[in-house]
Amino acid sequence: MKDCNGVAIVFNPDVPSHLKEIETWHSMFISTQSLHENQCLLIAHNKPGSATKEGHISLASPLNRLPQIQSNLEEEPEDVRKAFVGYIGNVVKAMSESREREEMSIIM
Image (spheres, one colour):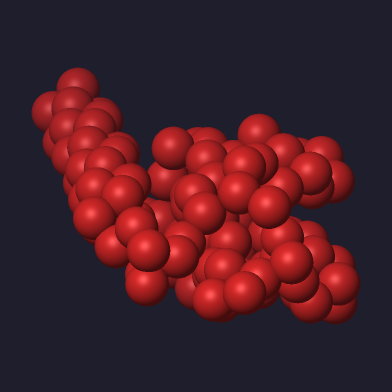
């Protein structure tokens, strides 16, 4: 994977294996690309009747530093949309800053 600009990982916090799997995804796509925390997003999708309580899911370091949203499209679709739009804004900003640095290095 070359020039990854952002990674969003959607997982079900009610499935214990998902918590371990996102560590693998982190090492494969986030650490190897040296992405900043604001270029990443963890989406804990809660199905209706989920046993997981709303709030921040406790994850292993360095995952606990990544932005995380609780997704419940049946009850709070607008909150999920707003959070995702904010994440996309962060990715676009990071891309723009990277392009500027690259252009400046060519000029100098």
